[in-house]
Image 1 (tube, rainbow, N blue to C red):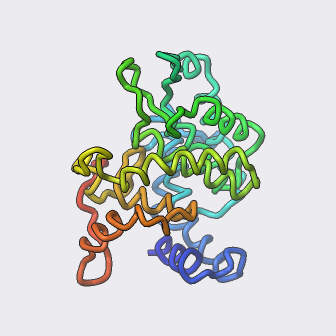
Image 2 (image 1 turned 90 degrees about the vertical axis):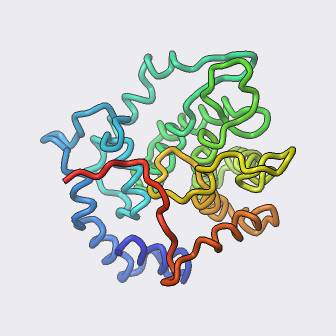
Image 3 (image 1 turned 60 degrees about the horizontal axis):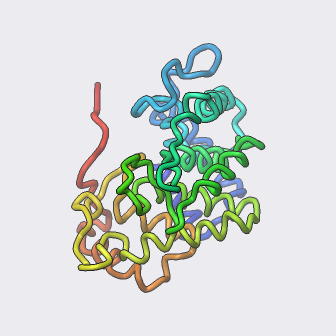
Length: 270
């Protein structure tokens, strides 16, 4: 697999991402059947004629997948898709959905989080990406994360709505040398570390079975593999509180050295 090869060469073996070999590899990713299928719904204006959040083929999810697959950075043909994302995330309808309940603003922070991550990763970010970062910083909860739950009794951050914003803050802090994003990522990482990525703080019980079940892609969901990957991106993986999740992940290793996709969130079609 081309994208797995990229991950191994760049993220494990430390190859220069700007080398000729890696540039050629990313070109192969760009013209691959998988990527062409993801982009196949684009119309003559370069837009995908569905709501950006349409699961799982709206512009939001296509760009999320392209970033995960290490599509090459700076492709101007993705600009129409970027504009769809901005039109949606800065729309009056979207902004009106933010609710301040008992002093906590409830937002679907994974939406902004994914957008920030793929706009930066794909090299198509601009000053509006900075505004999305400011939005997440403004609405970060006291315990370090975010939550979309509008019930007043929801007083703790959600794993689902905090992991992807954490990833966005890590990415933004690295690329922009931004201390506010760095501090936000440290606070957000603690939500997961305090719970050893899948255990309740009080009794040490598994919070949710899906958290210890491996999926790919996760989209906006959470599992220990996605959590460990994001914590590794932020250099939090050496924290001893990751050990239980790492041990559990290692126990799932297959004889060929890979890991199983134990569950999926998509439905395959011909």
